[in-house]
Length: 288
Image 1 (tube, helix red, strand yellow):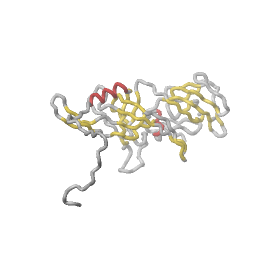
Image 2 (cartoon, one colour):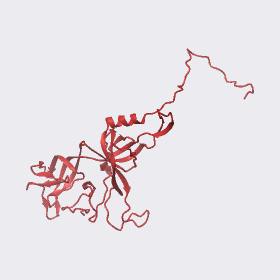
Image 3 (tube, one colour):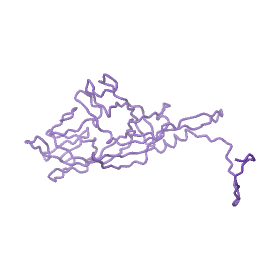
């Protein structure tokens, strides 16, 4: 390299030269404006904190428990509060794998910085649960069900409306004529015209059902966990760092339904009970 300075060969100018002048003023974010946008366009959500369930464990890392407990994915849920959040990009895209059909339904949510009518900050962890308020988010699913001997069958989700119910012989049953949906979202037969029971096998007739239910959503991923911006106090001129709202990816509850409930565990949510696979229903047990 020459000691005379820069020996690079210059390039001739082409056209008029425009100099890039950066602004000398500082750019500040308005946290309240962010929250106002979210709250004005969002829906009310109840936030449940996910807490690891330690009941019945004798040592750290052990999977066996001394007492029977019922939880969801090893978590307990406690109400944290309600906030208004934007809800967007909700899809329904089941994947077909070797294990069967896996539901990958997901959505994007942006909560405000604080709970509604409160100064308490919204803090979210993967596994937390969101339930929508003041609106019926109806989604549709279907499944096979085996008739029980007591005339009541539990579904995978708490049903709100049955669109179609067809027996193995092709007979179509009607809601409020042959059956009704009880307070627990179960199928309860009110007519003698119903799927039968094979007494030799002690198993009920299989029927298919298409129905609606109200889902909840579970936090799968934190897209923006820590978003920090510069804010200037208009009164004092003091400039500081502030945290902007989260952005989270949530999955619908049917990805998270592997809960085991035993006879000694209190049932807090009907959707946390196992579905029976025999001719009878045994509440609070696996039914096997």
